[in-house]
Image (cartoon, rainbow, N blue to C red; front, side, top):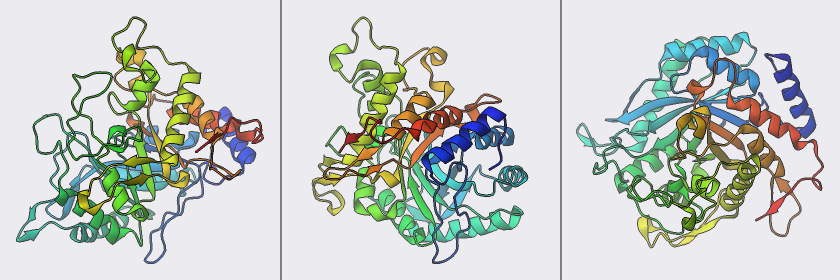
Length: 408
């Protein structure tokens, strides 16, 4: 491990020794090869680039970041387009090599907010297909490896198909063709690559048994906000849970269920009442994070009512696949001036991670895969959310009997 400032290095080394886990900056196998799937670090701390400078990315890596999600590419006409360039990747790969951090894992993400859903439909003389997109990704990845000296390639893809700003757009809904392309591309790549999905929380909402494909629902804390989903991504996951190595739930969705719980205590009677929304304490943040881990790992019933051939069923995410999505400083109520996006400090989230999950009829404690955040570009020049997460995770040197463990 290559460390930056002395304090950061001590935190990282203490963290690694105390909980005896790989991946606190290491442990990822980055070279995808036929028949051998890459591995993920445990715990995993990831960030989305969103145009971040090489300097900001390397600062985050020094603090403990071990997975980079390059954002964004798009799928259209059976090919890849977008803003992830060999120049940007090459600069980061060189800097990481100079830091002796070739273990850092790289994904490429497709979609993002306000990107039209163009991956399905007609592609030339035939329909667009997940298989064709998989072939295009393999070629694009191989070309990137050829263009960037020392780059072992992207270990996988990340699905971030969301809604758009124009409410009546057809892209504020999922259609069957879009689902099929996403599923088939994932299936075509899964033998050699890792597959991630990163739904906004309302698209994967363990507090709601409803399901449909529109992205025009209202939020509980603000009925004027009409861009929420209703478990939209759960159909994709339920169709093939083994297709997805990571489920990274965006708690930072605008007016998300977690924001409702964090700022309004999850009570509609508090909306509009004096004293609400409240300022969240560290204890509030830890509690809400615990609730989310328990809810998603424990599972909940989703009423698919036969959509895509799916029966009503329990959806749950194994702890080993679950990643909680956070926002960094841009979402802080003091900075943003509003409570639109929930902001979680890193340290209470790391402490919640330490508390872990135990399963009914078992005394074994499991911890979720880790955290990701949006976005590295909005880190300050010399610090990121990662340092707080590392500090919280370093509290895991408590014995299991001292930790406040919850059961699902």
